[in-house]
Length: 104
Image (cartoon, rainbow, N blue to C red; front, top):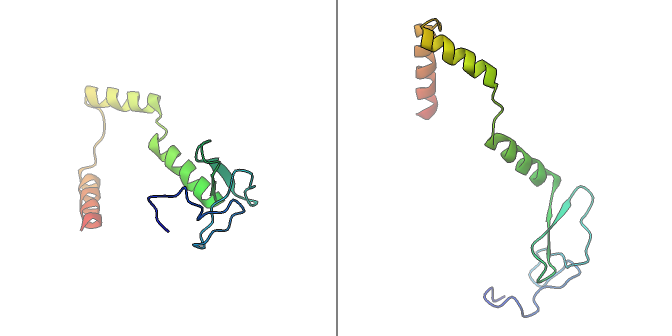
């Protein structure tokens, strides 16, 4: 198949094509557990995302902005500014060493 000229009919709208991959036409329904996502209104093609892909996308969105307890951050900043934030030097050193081991 010539990928530079996809307008020539190598794809069929019933979900089967000559190359064996699956592309859904404009009127096709997504299987159970899969959500359709429109690629655009021009060609009427549809991409189907599995439930695993949907959950990975949701996890990526959630990870992009981790939850932050602003009140806790303000308390720690205040304690640091006042010099009363306890620092365990041994624990800090152990954490740095463990982080270095993960990178190696």
